[in-house]
Image 1: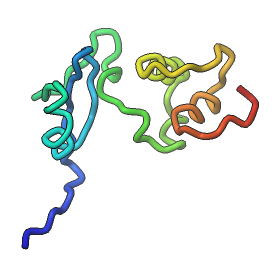
Image 2 (image 1 turned 90 degrees about the vertical axis):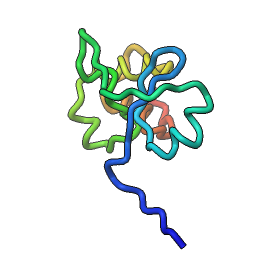
Image 3 (image 1 turned 120 degrees about the vertical axis):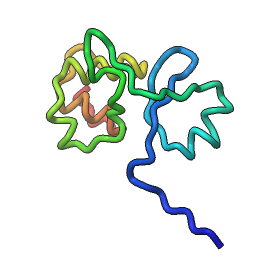
Image 4 (image 1 turned 30 degrees about the vertical axis):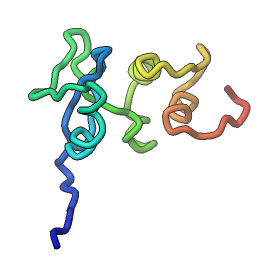
Length: 107
């Protein structure tokens, strides 16, 4: 019986119908995303204005990693994912939204 072992480098980049780029596992692409119209990208595409804009999925990062990212990039990610945040949100508020943490009333 064959044993499936997920390799840590088995992530690929795919593009949805709206042109957004996502990082998914190759198996997830084969099982789910290819049937939903996503297309596989052979090379990571980058935006001319911000080279990290299309390649980073902040949902997969830890709090410590997110703290190293500028507020503007965090807000751009939330905008791209169509998640609302108050204009007065500070870095901790933005990180809490990305991590899906409960609102403590400060937002």
